[in-house]
Length: 234
Image 1 (tube, one colour):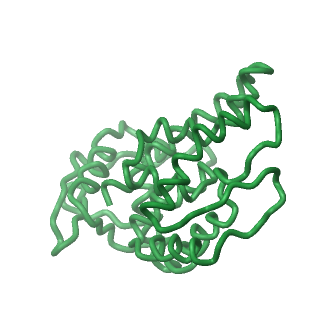
Image 2: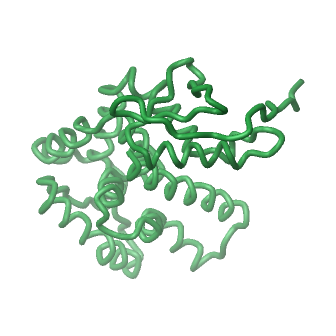
């Protein structure tokens, strides 16, 4: 039975308002999450995206082609019951942010990291009230408690749907600052994803690219871009 796939049983998906929220029905029957909760979403844009994914299914359902549905399910079933815990997990990235840990050499890589990452740290200090200091090497050195508290407060203010998208922006990039940069439209999300891979791209330039590594990176890039779209829809 490992090859079994659920078959399509509906003709069309419709967006339906439910008070201040929105849901999707399949031929009039409301969708529920895997945890059996009502699939109630905070915006019409998100519900429209979910409905489009269900309408686009063929004779069998392929969950891999339904990223908005998966993310909405996750927000309801996984994030909402553990909202504070998820927020704390993400806020902790600030104390070991990718952008703060710099290579000791070669000089050209050190210069590239400074040129591309420093402006984002400066903006985080200016706009988020969170000055984070760069370090050389990989040994952890704590950041200022005041900066971490400022970042944590912003993360904890997010609702479960925002946190679901923000979780992937941060975890995929390895950077709380890049997560905020994407969420707050500081730069194009594709450019921010490239910044998260600065070290890997440097290695590829000098030692060549590995096909499997590039394929895995592309999967993560697409997930990062989806997370931004989901965050915006939230």
